[in-house]
Length: 106
Image (tube, rainbow, N blue to C red; front, top):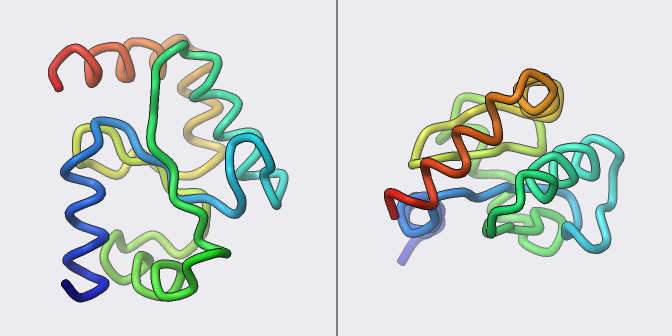
């Protein structure tokens, strides 16, 4: 499976996935930390991909998603956005609704 197919499969197989620098337990940048904290605060399970550990994903994902920076959060196969958007949605209470619905549907 090539990297594009692998990324698309990861997005398809997981109702919520964050492509980030580091892991939720050990984030390697502030933006990734804040986005993963927002997801964690929603109280749902989510998948993560450490783009520092997988440089081919780090290189290919921006072309697939048309989003140049990390983190990138996908819910139900759709790009939600990066840190600022995810945190803003969380502060408005929208991220909680989106994540819970995604987990229920899966």
